[in-house]
Image 1 (cartoon, one colour):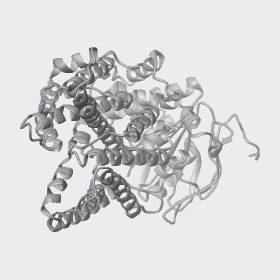
Image 2 (cartoon, chains in turn purple, brown):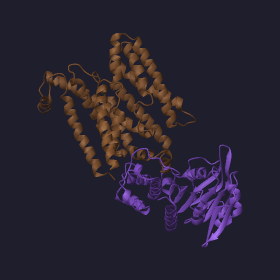
Image 3 (tube, helix red, strand yellow):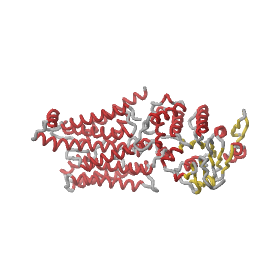
Length: 262
Length: 329
């Protein structure tokens, strides 16, 4: 790979080395996310999937290496402009203060608005469309604390859609969602990413979900080593079994790879 | 987008405030009622009535309004910062520090402005102590701050009790009034009004960021808010607002906790509405409470802090019950 910035890529990490509390997460990771691409991060519990996402969000510093968003180093972006390009779905959400569903989704417009500016009709339309896409448009005026866990997760995804970032980072997007909503939500995000030529990177413990929706897989092995490549290259019985320290089988079913513990 | 009901709420509060001022101007132990006050405004005539109105009543009403407004705004900020709906302006030990300083001034026989200055700097001193102690590796966690605040408050409480038990009888009486919150000798100077206005402008500037911050630090950071900087500004602002309120009228409880809550329950969750609404309702509430305080057992006066609790508790419980029902239905 050339050392000049490749502005065609949405995200590029260069020799990214990360550790947390003395434990290596990845060493010299060169991850590339091209427009329209989805990347899945897999790995055992505690291998640093969330930490890696948080580093991409600039919540924590890398030990070494650079992260480039659209060819520009993250620290060269202003915090606010960055938030119009880069958004994250957290593993869990906090709703301590009372708020309606629509108010919550509209939070996603924050980075797009200037100081003193209020959300206008257009912003509200964006939020309502996102709620509709996630099937919770009817709940717009409901209190968030009356929603079920799955409905909250869909609201969180709708809030992220309202933010309209170029790169979607998802931390366990399937949390609290039943199997139908998992597939439906990710289908929708996948379609959005393709249409908008955006990028997506999701950390998940669900190998089948990653296999179904991702073009590239980053499998963290827990000691700073990793396997990065296409689904076919990474999602093999050998790689997975050693990564999870558990015998994992792969079968082909209806043209799709399916994974399950032996 | 601002919703119509929120505009209605603000307009209603504004009208209520004007009415509140008139009621407050007309309350007191001397015979100067609503009609006489209106007459004085429309048709000023020099004399005792005018003197009472301009030298006693109006300054006291303004002091009550400013104090209530400061406390309510500070309450809003603290509740977001500590992510705790039960937070109030005094939760980080501000009132204890102010009380110890003010009571010391009283026991030294100092009066008037000295007590105010003492309270103001006592409050800031306490905040510095709490932040100094709660700090760990350039970071303050809400839990650490809360715990430190509670412990420091307990320490101040002990000092207050020492002062109360060792002081001369006549100063103990003023000390108790100060501790319960009292407006009988209060004046809101130019500085406190300026602090209120600057506080309002500053908080309105950050109001949308406050909406985001109330969803959690990480979410706010993900949406482009500079969280450490914002929190520092907020802690500073809330501390100055509270210190200023305490220096005017002692430690009046309840306003800072209950007013933001009432407004949230009434639908003002957006901080761009909640902050000005808190200012208006908080000021109003304290002004009305003070009108009661000086008329209920006139010519004697009650400490206003007693009245805020007596009015505030049932009103708050009613609203809570009512909205609880609506949500369940």
